[in-house]
Amino acid sequence: MAKVKYYYDAETLSYRKIKRKKRTTFKYAFVFLVAAALFAFLFVFIAGQYIESPKERQLARELQNMQIQYELLNKRMDDAIAALENVEERDNAIYRLYFEANPIPEEQRRAGFGGVNRYKKFEGYDNSQLIAESNKRLDILEKAIVVQSKSLDEIAKLAEDKEKFLEAIPAIQPVRNENLTRMASGYGYRTDPFTKARKFHFGMDFTAPRGTPIYATGNGIVKRADNRASGYGKHIRIDHGYGYISLYAHLYKYNVRVNQRVKRGDLIGYVGSTGRSEAPHLHYEVFKDGERINPINFYYGNLSASEFNELLRKASLENQSLD
Image (cartoon, rainbow, N blue to C red):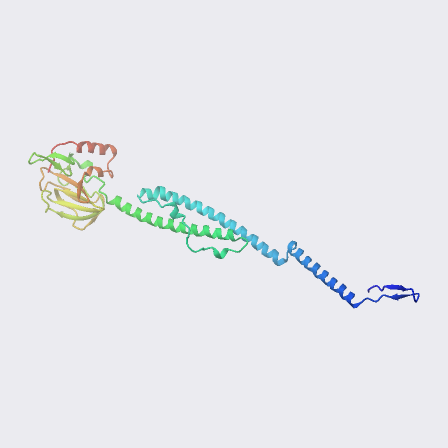
């Protein structure tokens, strides 16, 4: 209850009640209301700055958890990038080098994405930079994985081709050492057994008894097994692919037919002395892209180092050939 105030009236010699004017009452009420509103605003403002509501605390926890998750995601991306870099290094330095393929440039592996800003949708938030950078790294990582995956597909194809290539090259001696009488003549200038003239001998002659087994020196397809080539008598030609053809001449008989697919080491015929031949032996030639090359460079498949050196020594002697 408001206090009642009095004043002393000297004329009546008595106390009279002080009556408040309506304007003064309104002024006081207005000041009170303004002060109350101001206090309420200050209270709400201060409370909003220093006192969190349950909803704000929940949102703050969610934001903190999101930041932790993004940091963990970045850590996992760091681990994934490190593992991928290890694979990329082996890919460039070992796999692609071995299969004679060009290394993939670093700028191609780590290329970004040009043109439109792909991360504009992440702008305008408190953690926009963190979110945008994480998504950018993830996109680059995914692209690098795709590049590496395609590279490994290419390496797998090269490996398959390389394996087929290594199996196809004529890489063994066509007559086994234990069956040889001697290595009669090598690749190069030799004395012709019939004319005694010095001429180039385009193959190697392996002396062996008639009927000695002859083996395919590499995987391939039999293209000829006939006696229609001048001087060769009964002979076999095997197409190994990759530009390689091997020829086996002066045979006693065949053990294959035309268009038959053979593997390295398969029995294809027997030593004889048909055609232009002075004695039973195998005349062996290797062609590369249509040109005769020295067969001695292709015996790494079944000769030891000492056996190869001895064969090389005998093949280098300029003696008389047998055909």
